[in-house]
Amino acid sequence: MDENGNDIPGPLQVRVGSSEYTLVAGGSAEVEVFLTNSGPSDTFIVNILGIPPDWTDDSGRVTVWVPTGGREKVILTITPPAAAEGILGSYPCRLYVFSQSAPEKGVETRVVLSVVPQEKVQKIFVLEVESNELTAAPGAKLTIPLTLRNSSPNTELLELSVQGVPANWVSLPSPVITLPGGEEKKVDLVLLIPTAPEIRPGYFPLKISAINQKDPANKEEVDIRLGIAAFESEGPIGVMLGSVQFSAAPGGSFAIPLTVMNRGLESATFRLGVEGIPVNWVSTSTPVTPLKPGESKELALLVRPPLAPTSQAGRRKF
Image (cartoon, rainbow, N blue to C red; front, side):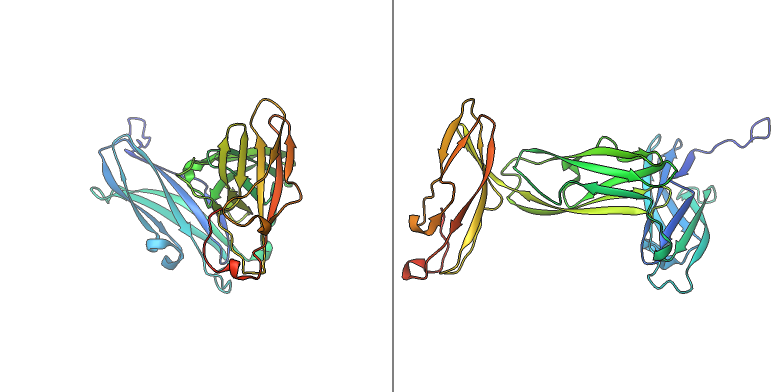
């Protein structure tokens, strides 16, 4: 204590993201713990007490190294069982943090966890996207407009996250969005697609989540199927393919969707052609395509290998 009888803060400061969390039985919540160390570098143990040990990984005990003057964030994931019987209610918990060198000088913080059945979780905000199917070329900057709508009268803090692609692809104006009661907000999620050959054509299942920081049980998720196209450019013309592998049995068929772009400064007419397979296998309703500067059009080729000896099984490059 100081000369006035007030407690002097120790070298370890502990802060939690929220003092109250609501969980759905069978769901989960992430308790964020922020550590600031103004003392010597040390290893710290973060414990959460007051709930069954099997509700957390590592029995509610996490170890983290914090250097002098450093700050670290620890996430404790709480997952009550799906069987709601006997577990519903409030759990006053103690969050106890101490260093390995001085375990008797720990810091304690109080957190309240409430476990509720699914039907008691009220939907208070909405997350929407314009399309659940998107395509981008390697090296592209893809903007995904998000709409957040708050139906409650209270201001909500919504934490956005993206799963399904590497974190270094993702750019947001802020990971936490402040959404006043009754209002709607537009947020642009930007994906910075790596250039070829760092990435291969294919599909990525994206999951975009918005979680209420005050009540993590209130969350919204949307799924997007992101296609990374093959892209070739020569002179003023660019061609983008959603895939570079196709298959069909003799007598069957497959369609090749593609996007043709005029990257030049003048209007031009482009003719589609295919090499490597017989011409009579291929058909299209738009063999000739006029395009203005900067214009693009989506086209399709239909490939139909005939039921004949010339259609023997195997791979063909075209």
